[in-house]
Amino acid sequence: MVPGSENILIVDDEENARIGLTKLLSQEGYEVDSVADGSEALEFLRGKRVSLVISDINMPRMNGLAFLQEISRHYPSVHVIMITAYGEVESYLEAMSLGAYEYLHKPIKLDELKMVMNKLFKRSARPN
Image 1 (cartoon, rainbow, N blue to C red):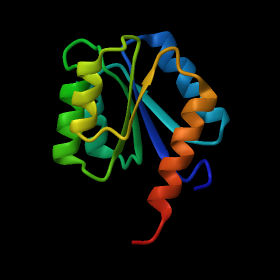
Image 2 (cartoon, rainbow, N blue to C red):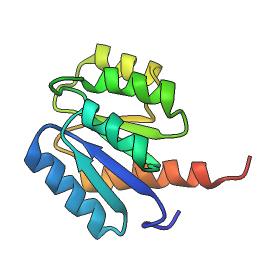
Image 3 (cartoon, rainbow, N blue to C red):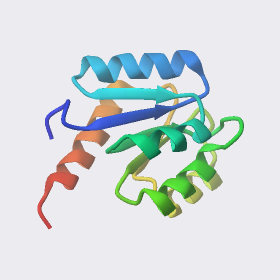
């Protein structure tokens, strides 16, 4: 997939992380929006098509795992990459069992994220 043909939603309560990741991916040519938590993200998803969500796990109101569960239930075609500053095996296993495509640790390395996204978008572009 060519950057720009995919819409990405960043979900992170840490404003600097959210803004930074939004800017970096926008500079790569993607259309990127961002919100501060899972509840805002679910509201956003009701009104806009999104191909990929990149979501933090530890957030107020609705944590990333509860949010991932809602996405899997209501938006099964949306791919999700979970991010966290905490490397807990339990949250990794839960995220993957709930349908996360990948689980990355903060601080996010742009090259690593781009590699995961390229792999995901190439897989998604293949005809069935």
